Structure formats: structure tokens, C-alpha cells
Image (cartoon, rainbow, N blue to C red; front, side, top):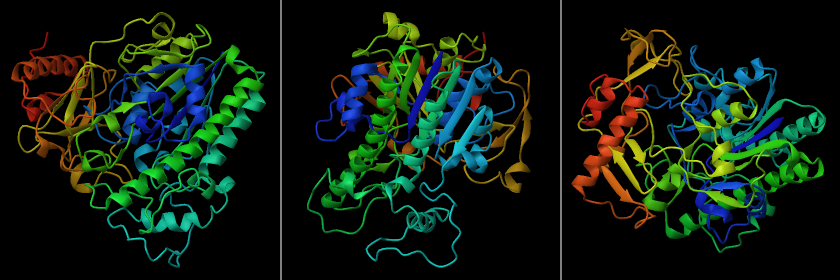
Length: 495
């Protein structure tokens, strides 16, 4: 048995033809939906990049206990579990966050891995002289030098084949070709695209001709929209061009599945970590606003050669935490008791149920839940305290915890999933990710009547019911007491 997981970053569901978009050029995604089962109620779990990948490895939420960081010593890792049971696991990626302090040990869980440099501000090309930047580009500040480094990197990626995404797919395709005759392997091809900046080649931009004479703009800031309507439209076309590039390389994988007859015995999963706001709700990007569906509602496609279902859709609530359970089940590896994801094989084959509701969010942000009909976003009741990080791997995204932070830690008893291991309990940074989300207060939406989430409901009875359901879900995930307190929720009495 073999499996391929193809993961894009910031893949916007609403820009894909299988989910109703009629203007983007993405024929491979359309073909993918014809060959797989398409999931209509796939949602994020933990946000953003590396928290989502901890969900993908461990099959349980990261965001209730910790922000961005590495795998913990007590964590179960799906690729490592496969590896320990004789399945060769390989990662081909250009996702540079794996190689910062806060992602430092994920790639080590695979049997083998390769990395292709140059995305965003990856500290790749060493250059002291200032980069050549168009005069129309407004400088970015407070971005850890990513803006400057990105312009240096671009100078070394003038041809398509020099960009990280083509190199990542080429490495993945090479693995498939060399191992197509072998059994028992899992390949994860993971590209940072279509994450910003939306840097791609002219042939993809030419798919979206439009009149635009504004400044160079392919990298949206993480804030409210301040740009003109023409700039907003232009940036959406820039995203679409990069999406079409992703579609092209997806097509190469589908073609290889055809030519090597991999559909007979190889699972294919195509997914993303989260979506992206392209001016909807008057916001760019992610992190600083409520987790509206443009970010939270994600695309997911799965081909399972056991049931051979294709061209069908499923409406069950699913998340990234279900993918490790699905892959372990597929390879016949027992799931650890700490893993809370659900194998999706029966969902694909028999339309089996999954769950009544799910949680999602950022550490320190609103806690969100949906039952598929309603989305309830619970903001902090006051100043977003108390809030703590529970970890044995004290790193943030690209830095270690500071000396000041480490001087204030205390020992916390084990949680149900830490295998008897006590933890560091370190004061959290409530404003680090969700700078403005709590200003919106609690939000409640009816997705059936208001799919674009433009008119929050005022229904105290419904909100009270969903709050009780949220408490039950948090309790099932062993949420620390302070998570209930900062949200103004009743702390459940231990059973």
C-alpha cells in the first residue's frame, strides 16, 4: 500500500472550480474532484502554519494548550508511527517554517526528507548589498527582514524551474518514479504556495488579463484593507495566477497517477492548512481578525483505492486531525489513544458519520465552533487573561522564548495526552496573534441563511446552547481551566 499527501498552504476554497468558482483557471483541481471524494465541510483546527502541522502529526488540537512551536517529546507523530511500522515516509517541501526555531523537529519524524529554498523571506541567499526593488513597491516593516530577503531571493528565481514549488514537485515526482514498483511508502509533497507573496511567472499572470496601472502589489499586509478597489482586484488576480501555477503542478501528479497506474493501490489526499482573506470582510490575510470561512472553511479531496469512490461529495465535519487517523488506518497501524481524529475511510466508502461539532482557533484568540449549520466565535470576556503556554519546547515562530518569559514559568501537572509528563506553564502572549479579534465580541452566524457571514445573529438562546456545546468540546480536549475563564465560560466540574 502507498499514499501521497499533497499539501498546499493558504489554498482558498472559494477560488477552486469544485467549490463553485467560475473564473479561475484550475482544470487540474476540476479533474481532481472527478477522481476523488470532495469534502464540503472541512475546517481548520489549530491556526496557523505550524500549529496546523502539529494537528496533522498528532491527530489532536494544538491551539488550546500552546501557540506556534515544535512537536513535544510526548507527541505521537503519524509519519514516525508509520516509519516505526515499516512504512517509508518521505517529505518533499519548500515550507521554510520547518527550519525555524518554532518548527525545528517536524521533518525529523520522516524516514527521509528534502527541502527547496527561497519561499517568502527564507534566509537563503546571503547578500549585503541592498536588493533591486521596484520604486513602486512600498517597504514593509516589522516583518523580521522578510521583505528585504524576499527581493534578494527573487533575483535567483527568474525562471519557473528555479522557483521552490517546481523544485519541490520535481523532487516528489522523482521519488514516485523511483519507488513506484515498491510497496509500503508514504510521500508528503508540501508547497508553501499559494501563500503570499504571490510571486509567479508571466505565463500564469497572462491567464488573468486586466487593466491595472497601480503600484507593484503581490504581497498583502496583515491588516484591514486600505488599498483602492483596483488594487484589491489586482491582488486577487495575482493570487489566482499563483493558484494556476499550483494547478499546473497538481496536474503533473495526476498525470503520473495515470501513467504509473497508481490509482489502483495508492491513496491520494489533497489538502491545505487554512484559507486566506483577499479583501473579504475588508481584511487581508489571516491572524488578526475573526476566523471567517474564507480562512476556516478549507478544501479537501481524497482518493481511497479500497472503496474507489470518485466524483462524489461528503458533507460530514472533518479536519486535519482526521488525516493522521485516516493514514494510520489505511496502513493498518493502530491509532494511539491520545489521537482524537477519525479515520475517513468509512466516510468515503459508506458515508459514515463523523461528529456533531468541531472546534478551531488560534492560541489566545477566540475559540470557535461549528456544527455545520452555525458558527459560533467566542471572544475573550475581558483582557484576554489568564492565558498560558504549556510546553517542554519553549520556542515561538522564529525565536526561542526570552529569558524574561523563562524566568516566570512554573510546573504544571500532566494533561491526559502528555503520557504522565509534567509541563512548563509559561504566561502566554494574548496579543501576539489575535491583535483585534476580541474587539468584535462574540459572533454567531447561520451558514445556511448567511453563507458569506455578513450578518451576525442576535439569538441569546441559540448562543447559550452553542456555548454549552463548546464547553463540552473543550472538556473532551482537556482544555486548561484558564481557557474557560478568559472566555467567560463556566468551568465544567470534573467527572
